Amino acid sequence: MTVYANPGKPGSVMTYKTRYDNFIGGKYVAPSSGQYFENITPVTGQVFCEMARGNAKDIDLAVAAGWKAFETWGKTSVTERAIILNKIADVMEANLELLAVAETWDNGKPVRETMAADIPLAIDHFRYFAGAIRAQEGSIGELDHDTVAYHFHEPLGVVGQIIPWNFPILMAVWKLAPALAAGNCIVLKPAEQTPSSIHVLMGLIEHLIPDGALNIVNGFGIEAGAPLASHNNIRKIAFTGETTTGRLIMQYASQNLIPVTLELGGKSPNVFFEDVAAQKDSYYEKAQEGFTMFALNQGEVCTCPSRALVQKSIYDGFVADGMKRVAKVIQGNPLDTNTMIGAQSSNDQLEKILSYIDIGKQEGAKLLIGGERSDLGGELSGGYYMQPTVFEGKNSMRIFQEEIFGPVLSLTSFKDYDEAIEIANDTLYGLGAGVWSRSADTLYRSGRAIQAGRVWSNTYHQYPAHAAFGGYKQSGIGRENHKMMLDHYQQTKNLLVSYAEGPMGFF
Amino acid sequence: MPYSRVEVTGDAADMLRHLSTTYGRLMFHQSGGCCDGSSPMCFPVGMFMTSEGADVLLETLHVEGLDPIEFYMSASQYEYWKYTHLTIDIVPGRGSGFSVEAPEGKRFLIRSRMLTEDEIEHFGLLKKVPEQA
Image 1 (cartoon, rainbow over the protein chains, first blue to last red):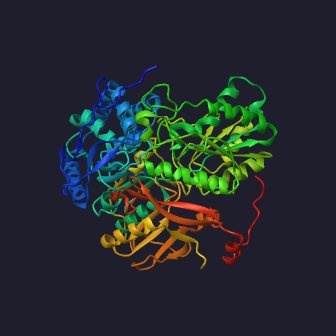
Image 2 (image 1 turned 60 degrees about the vertical axis):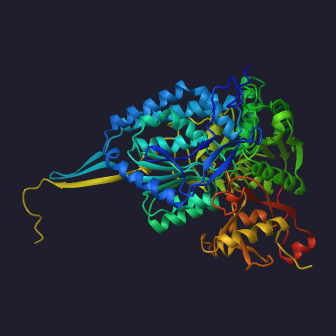
């Protein structure tokens, strides 16, 4: 067991600077407004640094810096780009602990997750796209004896990326790695709730990236995010967030006629068929862990398995065992490696979760466990902690239909396979889902029948590179985390070449 | 007492008056899902395009000193929300998509209660008894 010291305190593995400017054209520059905003750690609720309050002028500067860099970066060989991505990964690996602690402090999530998931996955993501871009090939179509279609991949140019706060570094890397690999330059806006950990990463890798290839403008959505998304000189916009902003992003993109990729919300079903409980073996334990996965990252995951559907024939016993496991989830100092659930990312996020607890009770859902804010005492009293919570109710209730983005599980039962699929699909969203069964047939059929982009089968919450991730229905457009994301950051250049010696004969 | 679907707390009304000095006429669109979602997004009128088929105008809010403020929600989301009354409150917070209050260090928040029998009848909401799931 280790408890990491708070950043900046004696013995800590890292220290945040007191202030971060925007990173534009390869150097840190003060925001044009001259203004900064305070950044709070959800661990204690205390301010720990100041961030540039960027605006449209800063976005203009960053886009211009991106285009300047694109003149050379867009022409680099895939080998050169892959080498840089691999070097970035190596530096991150050598600084795993430092980055993990920085991420925990900015976001509130437990350090055991940042050490074992967020940062290692981000490292692997750079390596994956370093490999993918080297292996990518265009195509040749021999249309007839004299006519050949050549297809080349070309970068788009300068692209905009708006990053969410739930996995600040990992979600940035999901977007950065394919965009850089494909030869684009980037203007990235971190979430204002978690604006600083990406700068700790930049501090380690900025010497590896050509000036202007990656620009970071901090600030608020309305002041910096909207000017980026609506900028008339970006070639693509990528966004992870919610539906209303997703619509706004598409609205802006339609005005500029540029492509978008969107990763939006979810209300993922986690379906447990009766044969799961056929034996109390290690598979049963695995399924029980899968049931408890709603608490991962404090439930602040777009694919949080926030609806558990348990077959009636095993419901009582399976749920009773599940409640015992939920009761054992350790909440505490996120910098303690024993802690399983940390702080919600912001005060308003905690308030929103509590407002859903309220409506859940009013709608008649039965509270099985949790339901309260946690006061962990000492300096953690000022942090934003929520007990893991389970409600039993009906799928038509708002707590079953809306993404709470907290450690709140809505639990219900189903009679048979058909009813399971019907309930699973009765949602506006289709990002993730889980199915659990010892029968390969049930697993396959249910996985194919659920309308979601990712169906975890006898597992949950794994995010390896090379498994496509993205939404059906109102959960977004595009697939990240896979080489197919390169297509979202590339133009196709077709050279249609005639090797015929004579005229076509029209004129 | 007139019937309403959406109300505004005094603190939220103060914030709206403050924001209107910078942004002019305002509107809300209730967001669904993900990080900043399940939250009311406040925009200057004209920034966010609503559409007749995709959105429901849930309420036109009257805040003293301001032009009427329209509150929209996507039609699909409304199906699950229609039996609840909403109150727009404001809490300390940080960030909210492109909603205009974020730089103030505040966040609009929806508080909900179930509609009363009277209200359900008034709004013509035939109460379907949802099937036992």
